[in-house]
Length: 249
Ligand SMILES: Nc1ncnc2c1ncn2[C@@H]1O[C@H](COP(=O)(O)OP(=O)(O)O)[C@@H](O)[C@H]1O
Ligand SMILES: [Mg+2]
Image (tube, rainbow, N blue to C red; front, side):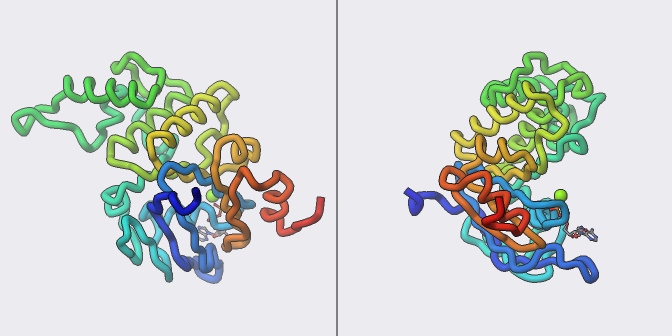
């Protein structure tokens, strides 16, 4: 079964320092279509630095990023998007005073006759997208500022997909959300997984790691301390790898 997985993205020996701080060191990880990978690790382990290099926000010092069988030394943010890598920033990405379809199309508004924003088309396509993703928003005229936390996250994910994202990166997508909203986001991610999207999620929530992800990559002090199939590993094992105290319970 494992060898039938479709490799979609790989990082190879990626390293990045900030001054004297080695944020990540020789990190190699592969990602597969239709798989949810959780990245876990203590504060400062290098999780955000790793995903910033995938999204083009930071440039690695060494190493390679391989996508669709092409090797890159680094990505600019627009190259990341062109290659289908979309990072979902929960709150930075949405404009509260704009409606649903304007948020989904932000920066990509279709034009009529080359000058008029085609609002009708934006609404139609937004509704189609929202139905496809089974996000529970029916009114495209609602303002983003009036949505619940779960709906905002879903909208941000919808926009990432509209931009062409096939690999979605989410840094703590359910932080500060209630149980019901968290469940909505989890259902959306599971739905996207069945549609073949590749999902990379940073989370501190161990229950989420086990209920949601297929694989868990543990980072510790800038290195990959473990790369496990979630179904074949235990909570204690993962916590041991995070803290570096394997076998201690
Ligand atoms: N822009 C930066 N400037 C200086 N140090 C940084 C910067 N970004 C991250 N670091 C350092 O790199 C290490 C890894 O950080 P980070 O990737 O944010 O870890 P995590 O997301 O796992 O908490 C930490 O020691 C952090 O202080
Ligand atoms: Mg971080």
